Length: 342
Ligand code: SF4
Image (tube, rainbow, N blue to C red):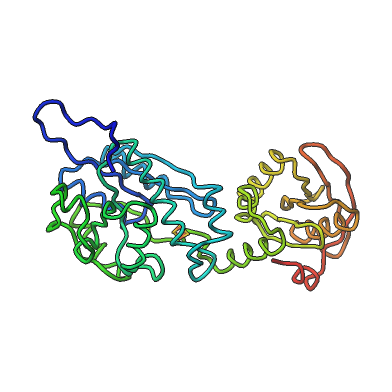
C-alpha cells in the first residue's frame, strides 16, 4: 500500500505505522479509530459524501479536533451515479448498491492511502451488522475487487476475520482487536464508555438509497429519464415531486427546502412558480413549456400555499429574478394531485 515515494527514516528509527481510517461520523467508525490510536499508530481519516448520503460533518470535525486527526473529505459524484444506475453486484433491499459503492470507496481510499503514505486502511465495519455488504464473504470480495486484499483492517470484528497484512507484519496487535458480530448495539455502547468516547451521534437513516420512498422516486426518475446526473440527484433529494406529461413539478415542503429550490432554480435557470399574494412554496418547473402544463403547475402551487382553496389566486412564473408571466389559478383537486404524485 505504501507508495514507493514514501520515505523511510534515514536513521535507525523504526517508522511508526500509519493508517487511513474511513470515518462516517457514526459510532462504529469512531470506535475503530480509537482502538487503532490506542496501539500507538498514526491515523488520518477520510469521509465520503455522496449525493444521497451526507456525513455528519459536525460529529466528524468534533471527533477529529479532539484527537488532532487530519480529515480528508471526498465527494463521490459521477462514479457513484453510474453504479446506482447499473450496479454490477445488484441492489440491496432498495436502490442501495452497497457492494459496488464500498468497492468504489475502497478504491478511492487506496489512492489516498498511497498519497499520504499510510500502511493500511481501517473501517468501522462490524461483521453481520448489515445483511448485504457486511457478511464475511462479501467483505472479502469487496477487498479483492477494490485491490486492497489484506489491507483493510476492521478492528471491531478483526478476530473473526482472516489475519490482515498489518497484523502479520506486527504493525497491529491482533490480540487487542475485537470479535464483535451482529446488529446488537450494546457492545459498542459499552466500548464507547470504556474508551471514554462521550459524544457520538445516534444511528440515523443515513443513506437515502436505502429509504423505500426515496427509492421509489429514483426508480420513477430512471424509468422516465433513463439517465441520472448530479443535478438530477440533487433535485431528487428535495421537495414533493409530481410528474405531468412532459414536465415535473418539485414543491418545497418547508423554508429550508424552499431556499434550496430557489438557489437551484437561480443557479441553473430553471423556471419556478410562487403565489403572488400569499405565503407558499417555491415550485420548480422542469421540462417542456406549454400553457396547459404551466396552468397545472400553478394549480399545484396554489394548493400548497396559504391561498383560499375555493377561489382563484395569482401565481407568478419566473426564470431567475425575471417575472415571465402572472396567471390566475385555482387549487388542484386532491384526486388529480394524487394521480400525478411520485
Ligand atoms: S448505504 Fe450502501 S449505497 Fe449507501 S453509502 Fe452506504 S454503502 Fe453506499
